[in-house]
Length: 192
Image 1 (tube, rainbow, N blue to C red):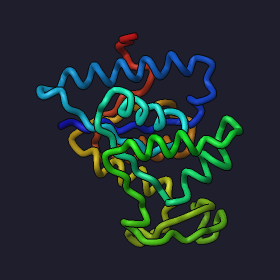
Image 2: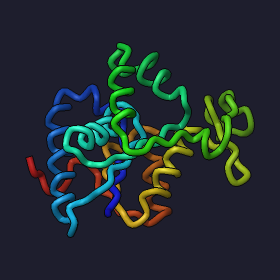
Image 3: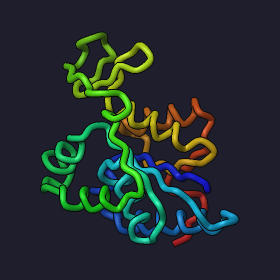
Image 4: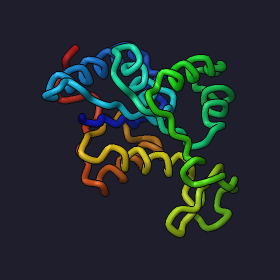
């Protein structure tokens, strides 16, 4: 079974052609599924609004197994409830997608409770918000989530939307370090 990890900017959600982007992503995933000998793939989503959300929606709507990796137990409430890019509470959609996942992993279950930090609290690289102490360094929960997703995608590939956000840049850097293949949208082959 091949894994397909999604990572991308939340900004996809506010693009005027968001529906076209989703349809192209869906067609590309279905094409990749058909290329597998057993036609079985596993989708991996970090559950950010936008691209990650679209990856999970394709899984849910097309009956493709998907796993979600959440930086903290409060992630949905913060990003989908209080700070949605659409300016509305989207917790119902978040909960629907999480409930539909074959596996849900909260990073607290791996690393324990995060420490909430101010920007620059430890050094100039410290990012404000929840941080985990991993391998001798403090790492923001969203970046720690990226690493866990990459670790669970070995032998697979990733589909990337945009590289402008710090989270997506971090994920792409981790994909490169892991020598994991990835494609950036728009994909070379437009299927829809």
